[in-house]
Image 1 (cartoon, rainbow, N blue to C red):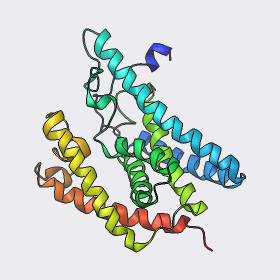
Image 2: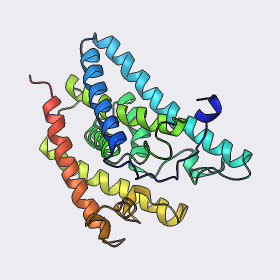
Image 3: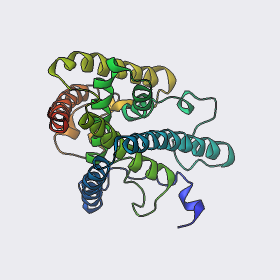
Image 4: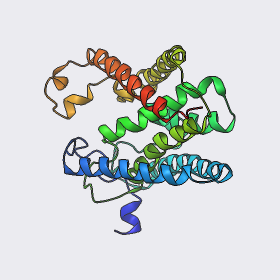
Length: 262
């Protein structure tokens, strides 16, 4: 692989659901679990000062990778006669600075909430970051596409960022940064509706071809998943609502498992 092969968006639109539940997906899933267990144990064994340093480095890496990928999208937009993917965009585009996807929003909010110690937002941001990271593990369309062995910057970014979206909040929860409670369901509900509204602004007014948070088009149709893929666009939002509820239920119990017992 050359540097040119790495700094490219080639393949990002190519059969992104082809590898779903296949050998490459299973390998990615296993590597994610193994890496999480090993790194969590290593970080937990460190002194708090060194843990703080790792967390800060990880959060900076999330932001650097996010905007480095945007730089690539902008570069290709202006330098290539034929765009390699639909992700490229000009500099004067809202996507240059913000995101309408759930994970993209958490890329920005997680560092801000942690660095500025915004306690009221921590339950929503921490749990939603975990949910967003795990969602990509189970539906890795931003990790496995094109040639799965051809690693490029967007793919690398997605692997690292979504891994940290799970690891960092669980480290913080385990350290006692917050204590997840059932009453946090209220702030979670307000938060997810706010993020969904933000995504719809992107879908309806910024880019009418967008499918932010999969609110416009049923993603399971593309994956040709029986039953789930048969639900018409629009009605699939009810399915997503159920899946989000189940997702938060699972993430809540995961967080409780990592909560340090006093």
